[in-house]
Image (cartoon, rainbow, N blue to C red):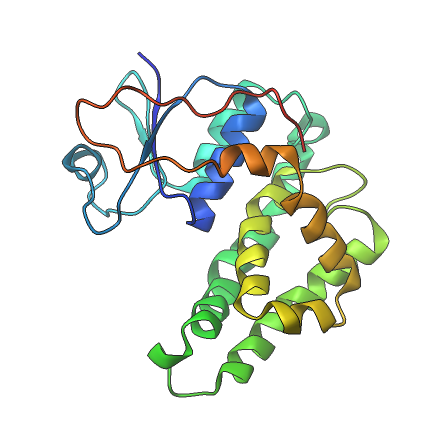
Length: 219
């Protein structure tokens, strides 16, 4: 019996989980979720109803993307995403916390300004730029967020920066974040991202298992 990952293709948290699982080269059954018709089997193990959800063969459930990433990479980390002596984990935490709190709040408002009429869309974008400037400063110094090599921090933040950039691609292309643009472009064009973004129909009970693409491609 394989671990089962409930996922949704475009969810940035689910993309983080798929990237780490793919990097770890683990055999995983992938179940694509239709958000308007979530599987009963998923809701029974994770009532909060959000993806990703990883169900292990022993019945344990991991339903936070960061925890799924750590679970996968602690089992196998061939590309060194965790760093020497797992040093990249601690270094990533402040970035992940800011991403998941302040930046995610700004991103949601920037992406859906009609839901948040208190301010204009440009206001929410400027709030998000506070984080972009921090990342740009890091990427001016090194190719990746924590140094010269790709790390768990890059994987954890990349799907959210992708989403922010996609709200207004013309604005992002002319924005003063040249290093961030380069970083994002390289990750978007990577073979690993292409592998984990393969489309599948929503899973239904009785469907033949679909396996997450194995670790034959690299960032």
